[in-house]
Image (cartoon, rainbow, N blue to C red; front, side, top):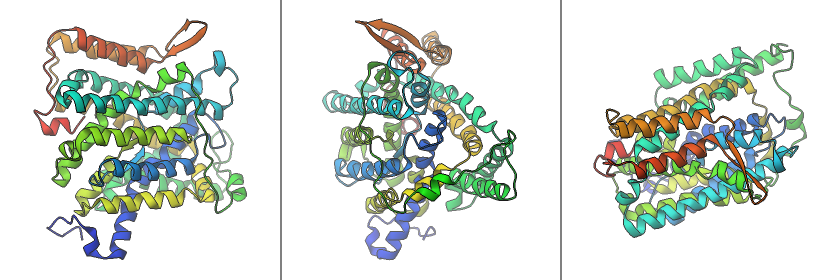
Amino acid sequence: MNQQKDIIRDASVLGVPKMLLLGLQHMFAMFGATILVPILVNASFHSVSQVLSIQVTLFCAGFGTLFFHLCSKLKVPAFLGSSFAFLGGFSSIASLDTGIFANMPDVEKLQYACGGILVAGLLYLILALAIKLIGVKVVMRFLPPVVTGPIIICIGLSLAPSAVSNASENWLLAIAALAVIVIFNIWGKGMFKIIPILMGVVISYAFALILHFLGVTNPGGTPIFDFTSVAAAPFLGIPPFRLPKFNLTAILVMAPIAIATMMEHIGDMSAISATVGENFLEDPGLHRTLIGDGIATSLSALIGGPANTTYGENTGVLELSRVHDPKVVRLAAVYAIILSFIPKFSEIIGTMPHAIIGGVSFVLYGMISAIGVRNVVENHVDFTKSRNLIIAGVILVSGLGFSQGITFTIGGTSITLTALAIAAIVGILLNAILPGNDYNFGEDSKADSAL
């Protein structure tokens, strides 16, 4: 079907069996990245049990996608999976050990992180309202690439130590995972080329299993796998939903990240529009897609899940298959919801060795920063201008230099501003104060799709 010249906008003409397979293809495209988020979050908490549940994550991805489609009038063929942008926030909250966070159980810290994500999702509504009232070009003048690019770079680079720490548990497995991803990404064909992360996880996991059953251990003497939780898990069960908790410190950790993810959303909508040949920024409208993405994120946090975001992997599937029917993407969402009610499947995924996570993270965390660089390059940010150099430089130093954040007390309440929050605040303020902002969204559609 990939050889067909004509684009298919109504997949029902292919028949039910092919529609089901196409939906399965979209599910596999998003699967590796979506389940990797809870795996990475759990590694940052250094917990043997699942702090962020894979079951809940899959449910939130499926439900969030269906909700997004309702908000966008069932027109936009986008899938909402777990956002990697918030990994730094999870890591920061996991390491908090002052004030109310001192000696706090990891599960409760996650609840506070979800409270911050819920607020971050609501920020989408403010941007959607502003776009509806005054237009996207006016709003984007306050969030140009010279601000959003360096912020995204900081998100990726701040996670680099975590990748090295996890990989150091077993460098053989880490290198194997990294090598498989590179091979499939560079030399892969067809479907395999667009799911290199999933292939890296699956093949390195199989390699680790072989080593485990041959009696090989990690360099420290610990076993590579522990299947105790898998044996105890039932085949069917309700995902372990949890309500969020709210604290100003956690909100200030998570909420600023929405600046990056909202820009990612705008870029993804531009990219999907270009791929499908429909102007989704106009119809159903960027304000509608932002509302769908933001509320889906808040609803996810409301039941203990991660933030959602539109997935570029699925845009690649649209280009590959040339089937642009949103119904196919909704089928993938239904598959994700079904898998969320299989605890044993979730526990098997949870046995993933941290070393494999580290190897995968070398690519993923670097790619996050690379996306920020691409944002700057493709939008032709002129660094011969002192204004742009100052803004980018202060953002980078703030985002990477304040590793412990800034803690202060207001009204007896201890508040911590993380490095990313500081970077976002100073970047937006400097962009608003310094003269010479000449960025106009919409003048270069290719560049805007890289946001």
